[in-house]
Amino acid sequence: MFETEGKPYLGALPLIPYEACGWSYGHKVGSNSHIWWNKGQYSVPYRYIGYKVDVKFNSHLVFIYYNRTGIAKHPILSKHMTNGMRTGQAHLPLPPKKNLSVEDLCDKARETGPKTFEAIRRMFDEAKVKGQPMQTAGAILSIADIYTPEALEKACDKALRQYHMPYYKTIYSHARSINSAKGLTGFKENNRKFGIARGADYYKKRGDDK
Image (cartoon, rainbow, N blue to C red):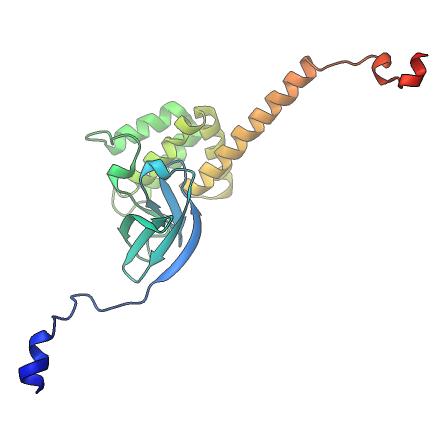
């Protein structure tokens, strides 16, 4: 009965064995169109910058969802690629520069400042493969466009005093704090220069005017 009635209806087994997936929720998409998950970065389309997304994962793939809709899929980073990146070029807000070289990135870092150059130089000098850190280096240099070159330079200076090899997340966090502190300082200075001075009459009670 199996040979004649059951077997003809059997389908082929899947090429990849079934694997239950795990979930991780509430990951905010950063200004570089990436999220941080499990010590690595994964890109999503840039229109989701600032939104929170969810991650479904198994042993070999990472699926990213916004509002229960899949928006990105990446091969999972291997365990030895700590602070690595998976980037879909179509996810980025601007098309990548053609024929970008290590020298181009180092020149841009040198123009930003000595501390920025030192952070980028260490990345390339200590990489096992020369071009491996290019995506991370490019993301770090783009912080100057998000905030200011001065904020990036100060952030690299602070990060280099903390770590021999600072990564994007550390430098970005410092740049954001430096930029916020700068804005707060400017606000306080403006208030100091143009503060509203109220005379004694302003504080009199209504009964005191009689």
